[in-house]
Picture (cartoon, rainbow, N blue to C red):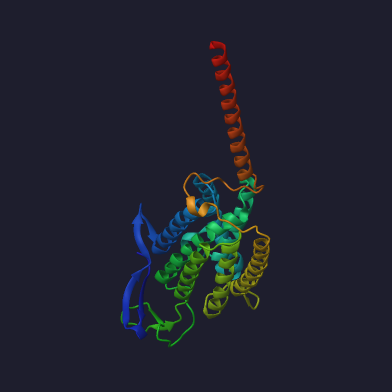
Length: 332
């Protein structure tokens, strides 16, 4: 049932210990640990994103759930397509079933990110929700998924780097008493890199100054780390002589950094003019938060409506006073 690996960290005095790639069987079909770990990451990412969306961005749980119904499957499909496209020559895809066989492995996070980004753009336009607010809420959740999901690669003894003798090297062997090949645990590098980024992003969220700040920080942080970590891996996807994920990582870093700097300058200029950014949903949260729309008219309409009601109440009170006074004069 499944395949077995023996993992060790000899420089740290850990192992070897046995890991089977199959978690359990259901209706005669094996369920891999990789799939279980990915699903846990998706669930936690969803829960965190929903909390951030409602607390900080004024996006309702219903809208966030509607988005997730499309976002999750489209992201998985795009993650598979990305992998298949850049692994076509070596993948042995002889049929459509081979292309969609994600249970055999083969997902790429950049495909999921690109597919998810396109889905969010379309959804935000249809729902009239500010795209950057939605991206800000979702980005830290994606990091949670990446932090957890990379440990699926650990179970499969994959997504590792080349040989090394560093103290934290990871040994991989197919037999308990076999000679281990010691490699860079690049899956762990990426998981830890995202964990540090997640902590930083949450700290920045408390001091958020402009929409898009969290999303730009995420793509810059992740892109920078992935660009270098990918250089250590032995299973990179290639386009000619270019490591695709490494190149895309550095592109994300430069684009994210540029957008962050430009937006930060604009935010400081607005603050200098007295238009300080205020995350109005950060304190109150809850279901009482208004949904933020693209045209920004919600708050104005609410204020205008409140003023109209107040004016109507005052006029009614004045009319009642006049009637009461007239009655008193008639009695006299």
